[in-house]
Structure formats: structure tokens, C-alpha cells
Amino acid sequence: MNPLTDLLQTRLAEGPVPAAEVMALGLYHPEHGYYRRSEGPWGFAGKDYYTALDLGPLLGQTIALRLEAAWERLGRPAVFTALEPGAGRGWLGRDVLNAVTGPFAEALVYIHRDDNPAARRAAEDALAPFLTANRARFAAENEPLEPFTGAIFSNEFFDALPAQPWRWDGGQWTREVLTAAGPQWQAADPGEAGAWFAAQTDGLEPRDGSIWCEGLPGLIHELAAPLQAGLFLAVDYGEPASRLLAKGADLRRFKAHSVDGNWHEDLGEADLTVDVDFTRLAALLQGEGLSDLSHLELSKWIRTHAPLDQWGAGWMALPAPERMKRTENLLQLTLPDMMGSRFRVLEGWKG
Ligand SMILES: C[S@@+](CC[C@H](N)C(=O)[O-])C[C@H]1O[C@@H](n2cnc3c(N)ncnc32)[C@H](O)[C@@H]1O
Image (cartoon, rainbow, N blue to C red):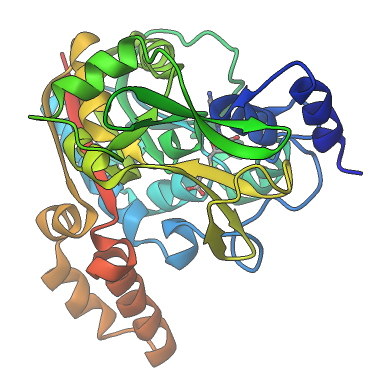
């Protein structure tokens, strides 16, 4: 029997369990959680899901340009620290480090922050040459961050944080819970979440709803406070708060490249994920002293910041299979039905 199912049964005997608690157990139980198991089903290509990094280096190359622009804006400091929370296999860090050249490459120090043990092993391989050259290092999630100048960037980090689905039933707020009889929506006091949701719409309609990540303010503070000056950049899937509310955001399970709403099944053996509320993310960052906050669809962000004409000309000189791969990578990141409009990029500035 799955050890997390056992644990959950014990917990259910005491009463309904909020979906956010089930998500926290399934992903982050210290031994059996999907992102905390040392071996197991956790995975990307060929396993449960893939991210933009499995598609090629273009996301990392574009982020490298944004980091270099931030370094210029900061007046070219001798050390530019780029912290990546939820860094997983370290592929984004590797792609960024591979893309940078010249004086910026000399200034850039990359920090991988993610306690996922299976991902950490993959990251040790992916980052090996940069670790040896002291251009990259690891930081544990509970390691206090020293003040630094540079950037914080992430990909699909905020969507992996435990969050609670809420729904307006026309007269009151209900939250999704697991009971011994299965998932149910039960009336509950949404507290701060209710005030936030109400402020994002002109009027709630039955079945409007969204997700609420209780731990987000603490985490944003933990990350943003040590950033003395520089860029905050987050790539994730999600929407502005008003659109999430109208859509009725939910909790999803990814397993073997298919997605469904059976979030309470296969705990520890399937990925659980939610849309990110970009309006709230931006508001929390503003509260931490960041300004110039904006977020836009990934396709638009790529078209705004990647020198596609220049890259396209360079790709023409590559052997056909490599050229095809780059073109496919670009299409996956920019076509609306693929990642182009489902993902957004938030940028903010401190200092
Ligand atoms: C969906 S995965 C994304 C991995 C990687 N960024 C990618 O795109 O391939 C989310 C990762 O966030 C990590 N994570 C969750 N909470 C974290 C925290 N508080 N600090 C750092 N990493 C965390 C998990 O361990 C997991 O590896």
C-alpha cells in the first residue's frame, strides 16, 4: 500500500482534509513526497510531464539576456548573483551559464536552491563544469540567504506550492476537501482569501473561484528580502487574478503526460499543480519593495526580448536536425496552444 495513502486514511478518520494539505503531503512529505523521494517516479521527459527546459535552450538564452540587461542597469557589478528557487535538475541554470559571455560571464554566480534529492543529483551532472569553476553552487532551502545583488529567477516554481481551491456557490465560499467518501466542496470561512478574491471582481457569480497559496507571502519575503538590488523574474503558468476567478481555478494531477482532476489519487507518485495568481504574486513583490512590476504571456515576452532575427540567421548555419530543434523549441514557447499563452513571465525590479 502507498505509505501516503495510509497516512491520509489516519488523517481522514479525524475529519475532512483541505485539498492544500493533501497537496502538501503528496509533494513534500519528507520521505515519500513526489518532490522529496530520493528515487522514484519524479520526472520529466518520458515520465510524468515536461517543462520548457526539456524543449531546448531558448528560455535559458532569453533569461540570460534579461540578466545581462539587469547587470548593465546595476552598473556592471563585479559579482552578480542569480538565485534560482525550485531549480530542479539545474537545466535552466546550465542553459543560462552556457549562454553568457565576456565580462558578464565573469560576474555571474548561479545559486541552485531546491531540496528535491533526485533533481539535485541531476543538477550535479548538469552544472558540473560550472561548479568546478566556482561559477555555480547549491543552497539548501533552509539555508538563510546572505544579502546579494543580482537576480532571482524561476521556472514552474510557484505552481508547485501547496494551494487551496475555493469556490463561490452563489451565497457563500466553499473549499475543496477530501472526505472518507471522496472530494467535496464544503462551506468554510476563506478569511484573507475571501477579501482578496472579492477585490478582484465586480461581482461574484456561482462557480467563480480561485486558488490561495497560504505560504506565498512568507516565501516571497524570504526570497526578496535578501535581494539588495536587481531583477525578479518568474516563468509559470497562470493568469491575472480576475481571469482565474472567472475560470474557476483548480488543483490538477499530472501523471504519465496526462492531466486530470484526481488530485487525491496516487499521492507521492503523481505531480500536483495549480495555476499561479500573477496579480497576487506582483502585489506581494510590491510589498517587498519591488517596482516596475509587469507580467505578460510567454510568447509576447519571448518576442519582446529574444533577438529572433539574429538567432534565426545563426540557426540557418546549423545542420538540419539542430536547426529543426531550435525552430521547434521556439514554436513550443510561442504558439498559443502550447506554452505561448498558458505561461506568463513576471518581471520586477528592486533598488
Ligand atoms: C515543477 S518543479 C520545477 C523544476 C524546474 N524549475 C523545471 O522547470 O524543470 C518544482 C520544484 O520546486 C521545488 N520546490 C518546492 N518548494 C521549494 C522551496 N520552498 N524552495 C526551493 N525549491 C522548492 C520542488 O522540489 C521541485 O523540484
